[in-house]
Image (cartoon, rainbow over all chains, first blue to last red; front, side, top):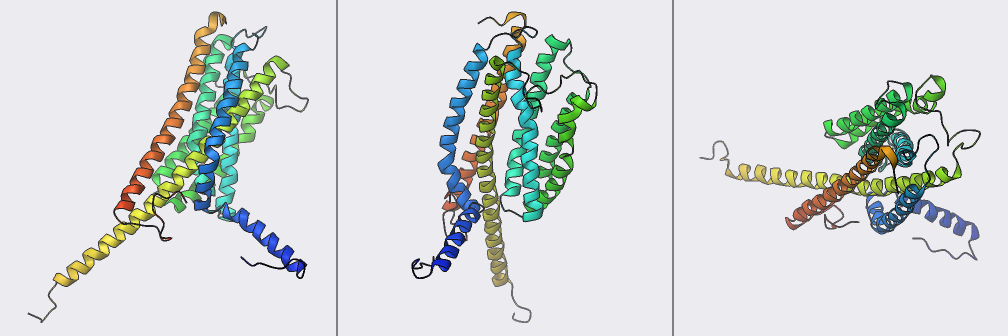
Length: 281
Length: 59
């Protein structure tokens, strides 16, 4: 690090400070720095998630019954956050895909790979809890309407992406293919969001994220937003933990390759010593 | 707290969410333990990183 006298060299000192701040941001792209950051942050994040989730569950349990839905409105407090997160996670993966293809950020494909199973789990939960709400309210578990079908397609795309990551052994080659597929799949996000406006669907239109503001009563909006915050925190916690695992998995892979190379060069050296040169006998 | 005639649907929803979230947490925790164990084994066999740090070192 260059130490400068700021009284004598104010411009150089300023430039040095900017350089050091930039280095701090770049340092976060270093997998080793990221590992030590997650080791510090994860316990606190897990504790905050547990507290917010406990508050959200209490508010959900004590929320009044809806005049039309009755107590089944409580299913909404888990269904809606999972549905939001199913799309948000794909959005995060799309940003990570840009990071892989455009900026070649070393942690971008790690984040995308770690996020996919978590996103698939949220989408699965959105589909099944929606189905469990639909049976008493609509009289059916499933309807091939635009919203339900587009979310099912999102779930299948998550599974396809996980399969692609597992099918290609080299992580950097898998990352590029997965990034392209993720960006193509991002077309589905506006289709899911606006499906209830573009087509005549059984699924009701947006009641929280709309231009005119939420149409939900405060008694339902507060627990819903608290549960959404809890699930978002849960996603960040699980993502950081899964990214840490992925970095360790890549470290393990490269060390195993080093070990294999060292072993094969030892075998080669051994076989050369045992081989009698032609004409030496 | 009475959940009315649709108790089974509400309880099933919350139970399913709890089960899936727990499976995610446990799967990630088991994966972490297994990776750390395999890195420690490599470390004990004398394989170190290019930086010279231990394979199991979280830095």
